[in-house]
Each structure stands twice: as C-alpha cells, then as structure tokens.
Length: 334
Ligand SMILES: Nc1ncnc2c1ncn2[C@@H]1O[C@H](COP(=O)(O)OP(=O)(O)O)[C@@H](O)[C@H]1O
Ligand SMILES: CC(C)(COP(=O)(O)O)[C@@H](O)C(=O)NCCC(=O)O
Image (cartoon, rainbow, N blue to C red; front, side):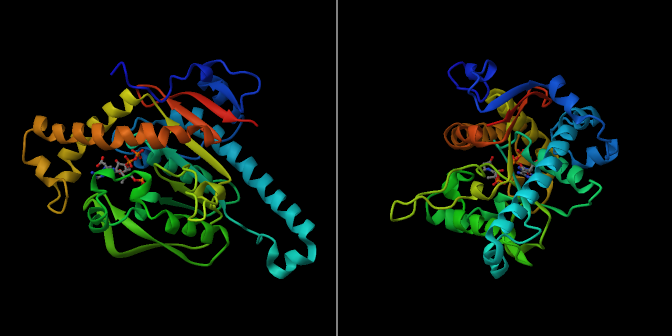
C-alpha cells in the first residue's frame, strides 16, 4: 500500500503557514472548547446511534462532538442575525419577498469516504443539536436517495461507479436542498435501501420545514457541474452554512470496510431480501474477495479522485486514528 496516497498525510497540514485558512487543533485543545456544555446523551443513546463497526463512546461525544455542537449553536445564531441584517438592508424589497424568510433552515453537510463513519457523525450531530434548549427540529437526509436506480445505472454503464458523482441525480439533489432552504412546507426525496442495494420504488421521505437540515453523503462537497453554456451552476455546497469532512487514512478506511462487510455478512446479509445474500452462502474468504474488488475498483478510486479532493472545501475536518477515534481537527478560520 506504500504507493497509495492517504487522505491525511499532507505535510502542509501538520505545520501550517499563517495564511492557511485552517487552524489545526489536537483533540485535547479542541475538547477544552466545550466549556461547560452539559452532555445531553446517555451511554445507551450513544450506543443506539453508533453505526456498525464505528467506535464511539461517551468520551468521544464529550471531547469531539460537544464542542462541535457548541460551535454550531454559535453559527446558527450568527447566521440568523446575518439574515436579519440582510432583510433590513433589503427593506421593503424584503417585504415583497426578496429577502430570505425568517426561519430559513441552517444546512450542514457531512462528507467523507464510504465506511469512514459519516452516518454516525451525522446521527450524533442530529441528536446533540436537537437537545439544545431551543429544541430545534433537526432533519437528517442521506444523499444515497438521489442515486440513480440500478436499472438506470445499468443503462448508462455506471453500475460499477455507484457512489461516483455521475451515479447521482445531482440536479434533483440540489433542488431538494434549495427547496428546503427556501422554506417550502413539504419537500420530498427518494429513498435508497442498502438491503436491496437500490432505490425503493415509490417510496419518498418528506421534510417539513426543519430548523436545521443535515445532509450526509460521499459527494456533498463536490463543486457544481458547469451548465451546457459553460457557465458555473449553483451547487449543493452553495447552500451549506457549515460542513464537516470525516477523514482518516485510506488504509484504515479500507480495513473498516472489510470489518463491516464481515459483520454485515453475519447480520443484514442473512435477510432473504438482501442483495448480498449470496455472500452468506460462500466461505468468508470468497465473500471477502468481492469486498476487496469493490474497494479496489469502486470505493478507493472514488475516495482518491472525487471525495478526498473536496476536503479543503469543508469548514471542519475531523481526522480519525486507526481506532476510529478523532485525533486531530482542522477548523476553517478564514
Ligand atoms: N450492504 C449493506 N447492508 C446494510 N447496511 C449497510 C451496507 N453497506 C453500508 N451499510 C450501512 O449504511 C450506512 C452508510 O454507509 P456508508 O455510505 O459506507 O457511510 P459511512 O460508513 O461513512 O456512514 C452505514 O450505517 C453502514 O453500516
Ligand atoms: C450507497 C453508497 C454509494 C453511499 O451513498 P451516499 O449516502 O454517501 O450518497 C455506498 O454505501 C455504496 O453502496 N457504494 C457502492 C460500492 C459498495 O457496495 O461498497
């Protein structure tokens, strides 16, 4: 694996020039920033939010996610004040509907590789944010609902590119977030099932004017594609008020992917409806060959070509060590 560029080993990130837009913090420095924020989750609740294979406990929540929840609270307040200022500036024009609506949702993007633990991060944030004294309504949506259905992926020759930017209906995804942010009463999205490895026909999820929307997925920080006229379009990330990139060494993520695959083989894959049931009927070694191929030909190239290059667009980079625990953080300051 020596030739594999990892997602963490850029020397400039260890020692940054003063002009770097990021400030680097150790876990200890970051955890001190939680100040007196109380811990609103119990060990059992944390356990329920934990994804398969992720290691997360109350220490991790206290040291890593509480300071983040505090920072996000400050961001939400400041963003709301800024919107008020904009509406004041727009004055009457604002009254005629040109300004942003009061209560415009605060949108948070959570990005990172397959199997890095984005879902756990997003679920923890949702639970922590919902427990602020203001009790905001926090909705969490994953971008897999906007994958093209398998039939369509087959037609376009993209079945072995699942998770690559072109395997999504990116316009529908951007429209979905734009509609939520515009304050529409009900906005719906398609639903993806890991069980059938496909979009669930006819099923939609509905989002009703949340205070905060978390949108989690591999490619949420991808820049917009240029339009046919060559002009840049508005992209998904243009609607984000804050974004988090969950980072780890490629070698660690690969190991987590295989470990999760082995666990899924003993659990979810046993379901008769599982797309992966066939891997419960062969030896673990044979099943793992499929996982290795998937990592080598789909998830790793996607990580290196598409996902990791978006890391520098995020507001916060969480760097996990080999045990899934966050070791270092980089917070955008400029
Ligand atoms: N084949 C599968 N069957 C059932 N659940 C799966 C399968 N693959 C992934 N998952 C689950 O789906 C969620 C999203 O996984 P993934 O997209 O790899 O992101 P991440 O691990 O970064 O959250 C995780 O909770 C994972 O455990
Ligand atoms: C569904 C996914 C593309 C992730 O989608 P996301 O929610 O990040 O948009 C991914 O978990 C996946 O299934 N990738 C295909 C390759 C594989 O089976 O590992």
